[in-house]
Length: 526
Image: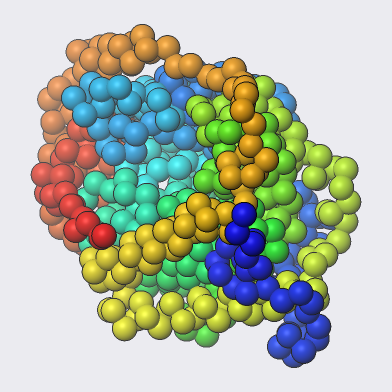
């Protein structure tokens, strides 16, 4: 077999030994102090553990509500919602393009009624909820606000996050609806609305996770995610918001991949860069604006269909890297996710992995326990250097949106992904169960099966909703939404909330915006 590489997954050559000669002489500071290399809070996990926020969603809202309740009973401390592909793409469940996809990769939410079912019996004033949705994020947020209102919970009491990060959709995940410019306008509307009305809510989770899942290196994930974040800051400032009004509520979402030390270094570099740029470039005065708080999720792309139980080991190592890197929130993947949506048993094991790290390993007893390691500090400096090199290249292209249109990010990721796959195929990167330590009789665990009849039940539900609502009111609300969308100086959130209360569906609202803004088609990169 070809000799294994002595480099990180990002291609950073790794020496056999690191000494003080490999580290820039600098004061690392303390956790909770600028530039927050060592963590955003002084006591880190001695003061409070990270939020254990297991991602869940499948089938109908009733199905996912049951899974939410199960996870909360097992000790989960925050909710995280996965939506199905039609919902992500702003399509109703009975749209022809939704056929076969309803409830398959997440929960189907067509209307305010579905959102109410999804959170039935869950007090929204007491839980923190994350929603992984981007193009249609404003509509799902509106549904959530309306459900909370029915529970008697005002918007200013709601805690959680909407992902909302549309730029990484064009870069990596490809679940966009509208062209980049109006999409950025909608993101900024959400930031402005949340700043005014929902001060405890994170309006954007600036997401490197999907960039990494698309095949990027750690350095690319770091650089492209931060570049997106800077763009959102520029957009909000351009709207007239003071940076210190909204920056404290921006959050991030990173991948926790298998290259243990590189991942820890990535998080440390990210905090340092964000703090410096927010203070020095954007003029933020409030120290809370300098803090990078982030959620992390173990790497789906590292999971293997072969010998899937080994994924439990991978996930534990990746989760430990996220904790040692200072995450504020964590999802651990289930070992069967390379095969299907997770079963209850697999989801419980994934949650227990976090609980073992939190309560049995001792890693929570001191902040940044690997701080000062010659190797970790060298990697932190190197990833920071590579990030700034990317920032310079992006700026020369005219910024993030222009770089997207010119396929810069897409090409960089494609080349990194190809290089990694070649290393695996040539045996330079060994993957247990795939190109090393394989088994002839690789047994598969029981997996979760989605009832095909569920799709028809969801379709019947949305059609019944349309039959009993007031169509004239719906048309009036959708007309207002289109009118506001045609004027750049109008925040769309009030119109979206009004349409939601009238039982307009997600597909109808997105169709109204498509009529005004059009759609987007990417020029393929080869």
